[in-house]
Every structure is written in C-alpha cells, then in structure tokens.
Image (tube, rainbow, N blue to C red; front, side, top):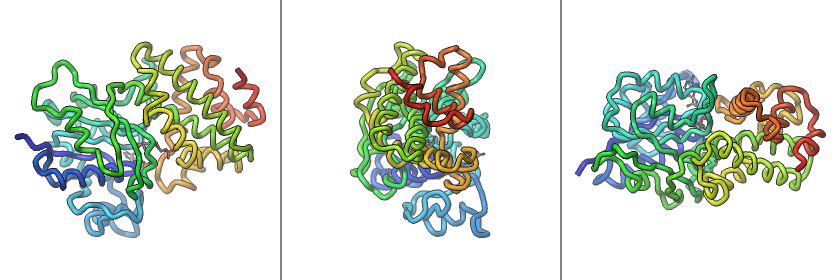
Length: 353
Ligand code: NAD
Ligand code: 13P
C-alpha cells in the first residue's frame, strides 16, 4: 500500500501547531504515512541563531509557538523546494498575503500526483474579482486542494486543549483511485484533542474563516471602547449575517448555508475569534490608542499577522468596485472606523436593521 509523504509549508503560530498535529499522526500511523515530516521555515535569526537550527535542536519554535514541545520527527527546513518536492500531501499554512509569492517559489515542481490542504484564512481580491485561496493554490501549483478551517486558536490546539475543526476535501472527477481521499485527510489531522468534521463545502468554510477576522476586529473595537458584552454580541450577530450574505452575493449557489451556522468553520470560529484571537486584540488596542493597525500589529504580535487588517481592506475594495457597500454596513463601518476616522459612537446607527 502507498504511504503518503507529508510536507508542511509555513511555520508561524498556526503553521507550527498544525505541523505538530500532522507529525504526531505520521509517527503513529506508519502504515499510512512516512514518519518524517519536513516543515518549511522562512529563515530568520533569533537571538543570534537560525530559527531552523533552534527548532531542530530544541524541538521548539521559540519565535512563533513558544513553550510547546514539537515531535522529534518534525524537521525545520529553510529550502521550500526540499519540502515540496516529493511530498504527496502539502499542508499549506501561512498569512494569506504571502500565498502567491510562496507558491511561486515552488514553480516547476511536478505536483501531478500530489494534493494539498489550505489552512489559511483569507481571500484574494484583484481587478478580476474575488478568489478563494484553495483555488489560488490549485491554479498556481496544479494540484487538488481542500480546506481546513475551524474554531482553532493555535496556542490552545498546540497545548492539546480540545477543539473541533472542519475539513472540506471534495474529490474532483479526475481523481485517481489510490490518491488521497477525505478518509486519509481525516487520519492525518484527527487527534483526540482535535476533532475533525468532514464537509464538502470548501466555499462556505473558506468564506467564514476569512470574513470572521474582520468581524473580530470590530468586536475588538467595541471592547476597547469600553462597551459591554451585549454590544460585542450585536457585532457578532450582524457579522455572521454579513458573512452569510458575502457567500450569497459573491459565490451564489456555491456555499451550504448550514456551514455558517452549524460547523466549526462557521459560527464557532466567529465566537472563539471574537473572544480570544489576535484580531480582537488589535481592534481593542486601536480603540484605546488610535495608532495605525499595522503599528499595533507590530507592537503586539511579534511577527505574527492579524489577517483581518488586510482582509478588511480587500473586502472594502471588492464592495466598492461592485457598488455593494450599502449591503454590508458592519464591514463598511469597521473599515471607516479604522481608516477614515469614523467615531465608534456611529457604529450602532450604521448597522441598525
Ligand atoms: P503567523 O501570523 O504566525 O505569521 C508568521 C509567519 O509568517 C512566520 O512563519 C513567518 O516566517 C511568515 N512570514 C513572514 N513574512 C513572510 C514572507 N514575506 N513570506 C512568507 N512568509 C512570511 O501565521 P499563522 O498563525 O501560522 O497563520 C497562518 C494562517 O492560519 C493565517 O491565514 C491565519 O489566519 C490562519 N489561522 C491562524 C490561527 C492562529 O490561531 N494563529 C488559527 C487558525 C487559522
Ligand atoms: P486570530 O488570527 O484572530 O488569532 O484568529 C485565529 C483563528 O482563526 C481561530 O480560529
């Protein structure tokens, strides 16, 4: 029987937490997977040492996931092509603004017998409209790509505190028998502390994961302004509505409505992100200090990315280009507060039904 070789592309906070999960399963299931897992690390110096050397010597990603011991069969590798070449399954996990350039670094590798899972949360907006990230991966690398998205704050998952996630990996018609299927994908990601719900809705899972980051920024704004839990719940309610509408307007007929309201990738991710995610922290600090979001991100996150900052801009670019701003009053109000000096006291009126 074929054994699958797994390569992880990305080693940030979530990248490293997911690599840990995958390496644990590769170690436990030698009949399905090759034991050793390479993880691409964008090389940088930390305390005068290369980050790859630190990870390989001490089994800890001290910069992006400190105080979590990584499995001995997970190897940090600075050369992305050495990770990707020969991998049957690529787990792609980086801040979404770098996806295009990172895929370009893998150009020319033969992926005709490989598959991928995207763990990114974001969308890609250009003059041509909006694209989902697994589609970007499929086009750029020429392989089948599914999506993993859920209520998954990385530091909790890495500490093996129980979480659920949603994986959508619907098989395309051209798929060959013996290629990776959703059972194999479940074997790769399921842990006793990380429960997997399998779905076929890549579109719903992707949109929820991307848009909730902007809603979480908004939740942070009302928290930072000193408003209460009721106000935050109102932002979350309106946010969920606009996430669902975004799917209907820009991907009509492609998302299953239940994904937004019943899956981990939907409402559960919105809740956990608005409670304890990085975007909520950035929104809170903006309301308190008024500093530009990128400055706050730098000051608070030590190289990590709050994806709602860029996604908020991309969403607004799309809504403006398609003249749909009025249909998404919360997303518009969040944008105006953080970029156009709209005072937060205007928020309730802006989103009134
Ligand atoms: P992160 O926010 O920790 O970002 C740091 C990573 O970005 C590092 O690996 C760094 O090397 C890399 N990076 C910096 N500049 C780069 C460049 N120019 N090119 C390529 N890489 C560069 O990343 P993360 O937390 O692993 O997030 C990855 C994705 O997973 C995001 O889309 C995020 O929304 C999503 N996600 C995150 C969490 C979480 O709790 N952290 C949970 C679920 C999903
Ligand atoms: P933040 O990026 O806001 O921390 O959210 C993490 C996440 O996606 C939790 O599911």
